[in-house]
Image (cartoon, rainbow, N blue to C red; front, side):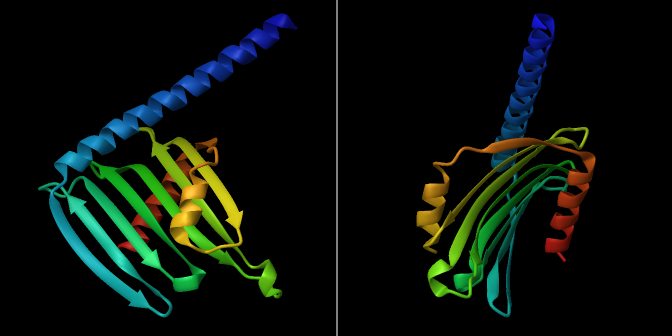
Length: 174
């Protein structure tokens, strides 16, 4: 029994260490890209109750990109998604948003603030950090500040998650 417990502790430590290494690797790559990407393209969009901007930063041959999508839907919510691609491979996604959760009783209306970060390895798997907060007020800055006090929940990502995120990047750029 003691041996089994020791093995479980070692496995947990190895997994946690691997996740930390991946996260640190990806952060270093995004910091490198932030310095290297110079070419900028700004696109504004509007449709119905949603408006926003898409900023795309690229290197000279457009093999690496940082794409920032900011949107606002008034009282319905707002958010920002940031995608990093290095040599045409998705390495990092950060999404932070607020959403209105309507109720028939106006006193029970809520807003959900969420932040999700995706770190992808060269093998197209990785890890996800996610935190959420439900509150009665809709002030974006106030909700985001309170959200930052929440701990991230961490789980693993598969190649299927990578493909879904890559599709999201391509769909947002159409």
